[in-house]
Length: 193
Image (tube, rainbow, N blue to C red):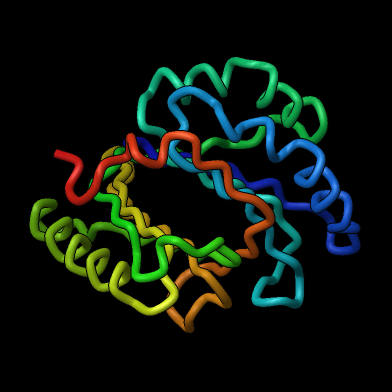
């Protein structure tokens, strides 16, 4: 599994209805995309749990070929054409789990990025993060949760989809506009190694 996200920060007075309409019109185009486990079409709105307006889709890829096909294909080129080329963050998957509300339609998401301290043994930091990921999966309202790491910058990312408002947990909160999950079953359960 590979996790990927790009953020498009928009002007403070930007009409977020434009993004909502874009997702309503085009979100279904990835509902059967090969190699894609899940794509959550996420936004944050200034003044609503966020200091900025932002479109920030989050992806869980079951195969790197799917991620590459998307990045070099027409879908992402449309994003580049309309908004400029965003920085694309990506992380190596460590775990994936269905949550207590796995059958529900996600309405919100949380993302928490945390550095692995230089003083910490990477394996110990990952074990602690795995325990946290298991806790998140058992939290009422959790649909799915994933844990991934960027070993270049030694950053862990926890990503969780929720069936209602996101709980008061550390990290950024997002509204989910649409979820494509053609390869949900291909993501597997538990540790990714």
